[in-house]
Length: 71
Image (spheres, rainbow, N blue to C red):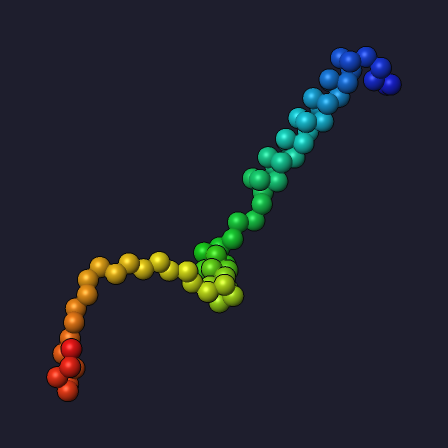
């Protein structure tokens, strides 16, 4: 088959896309999902390497007396 006509090309491309989609679906269904322990281990490794980003907001200020009487 030489695929000289446009309809033959369209059929060949459609078949290739359908086979690719089928292979992707089979891979998605059969892939190995991480366990909860593996997810937690990866989370802790990320925290250990990157650190933790935390935003803070000052909500209230309370002035306290020092032991020597200064504010």
